[in-house]
Image 1 (tube, rainbow, N blue to C red):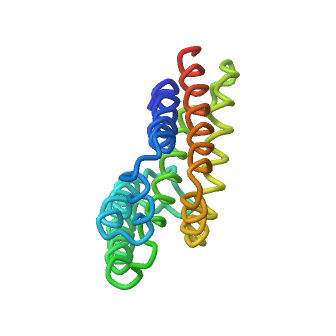
Image 2 (cartoon, helix red, strand yellow):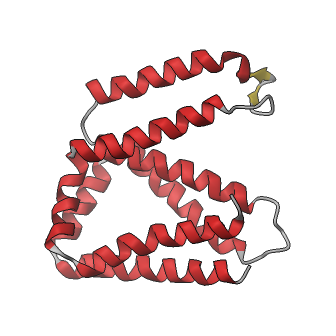
Length: 185
């Protein structure tokens, strides 16, 4: 992925929900209320996250080693273990699974974005993307480890329409800034 594409995709990832928050439509509010326990959202978010992670495991290279241990020799075993864990999560740990899936997707996407920005020291404006992605990583780790935080934040957000609009304004601004940065490369 190129730096420009990573920045544009990150801008879109902020713009689209930001616009939805600004619209504050009843349909959007209903989707947000249902999201933490939605079975369809669990299949979508956690399913995509599981497939993406398994794809990354399948594409491990000899350079992806830890303690001089080449994990490519254990690729099939790792896919079996992580695949069984994903299926077991769908069967036995269904509570707040869409939030966990979203957190995994955010971490995987942030990893791709950071890889696109890595080593491009002659492009200082890439640091805007890097900073946003590190904030996303921290947020994803928090809600992945304790998904009830996002559930509670969504409930709090939906109590007053001006809260959702404020979040929407912030997300749209971040998206616009990232879009401008992407055009400046």
